[in-house]
Length: 330
Image (cartoon, rainbow, N blue to C red; front, side, top):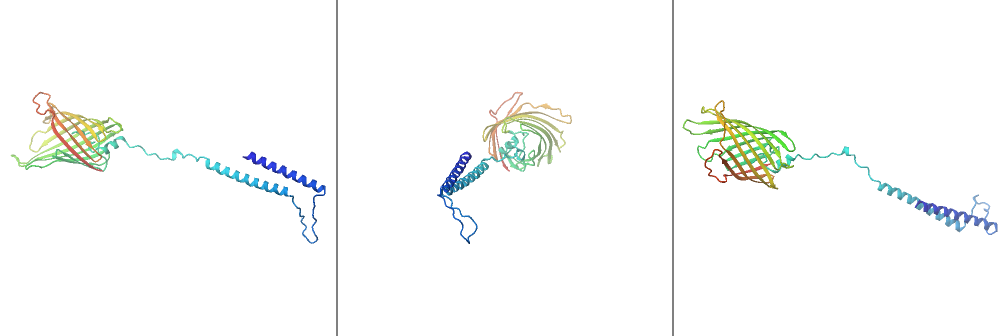
């Protein structure tokens, strides 16, 4: 575009010089006339410009204005098409992705246990979860932090002279990675019987346990857990203290968005006296079932089947029915 306008200006200048030469030739031949100023008029010389020169000046002016306007437009367009500088990546703040266990605990109110026994998972901080087992046991769990929770469970007094039974426990995670969790738990229990032949009698227990859970999925919706707990029981009636070591393994496997399959097996060893005299329990306790859940409510339905390893009758083919319901307020 610039070359075209330069050629136009050169052409107009050439035409102007040719027109000037032609005018001077006419005056040499007497064809031109120059008026002298009259007496009393200003000293300026008035020259009558030929029509060809007037057209040349007008065309030159139009070309100059067009060239200036085109140059300004081109500069503005270049400024608009120049890309803006990219933002400095160092100044950007990127949100860290949530840990997989956070999504797992928030999506399943029963994530802190398998079918019956605890896992290493805990309830979210500030949440309150109500648990009901077979309409007999009522429990409340409070998430103190995302890694520490406290629970209280009591037995309903549904009949007269029914003993008072209650448990309290605190569980806290000491290791929490994306795929592995390890937790410790301390517990205290009390049982009190009314109107017995020898007067009122009470039983107390203290215990400690360790729970390990590994995530089978990236989001920790499926878990494989193992646990070992110790319980010491004491009676106010003067009986020897009792010892119980319980070890178990469980699996929670998600098969749908709101459905999980549950399975666990437990056994142990126990004894009485100061030295313990522990003996392995003659059998296993197997539990299996299915869990239906949303973000706030969960229901476990299944069976608990004792299996005697030393032989004996087996009156329950599939086991004893068992059901529990939980509701969580976040």
